[in-house]
Length: 115
Image 1: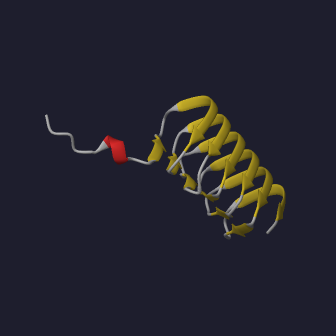
Image 2 (image 1 turned 120 degrees about the vertical axis):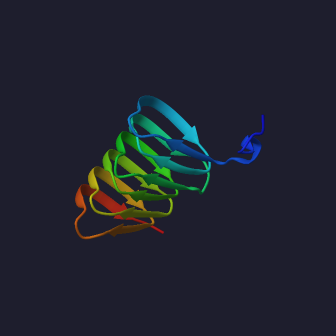
Image 3 (image 1 turned 120 degrees about the horizontal axis):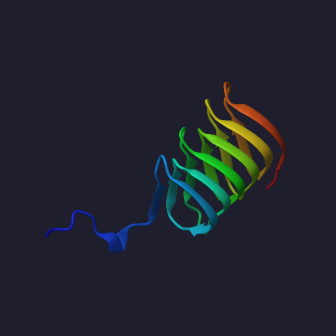
């Protein structure tokens, strides 16, 4: 049987739509969250995190860069850039180097940017 994907070289995570998971996660590589996740999410390198439109997160996120299209509630700490696109909703606190909120996104936050 021929293997289509070389699993030794994969460095991304995709948490699919419809799944409900909770706990503490330490991931590396580009990560896309389309599921419902509760807990702590740590991206342990400088890879991007994307909360897809179907994604829902509640808890604490530590990452470098993040793009949010879905629903996030909790504490977000980014060493890089946070971008919130419509139809995203965010409720909680954000600490980031850069913050961009596009018109149409719902944001109720306490936050600051830093260098």
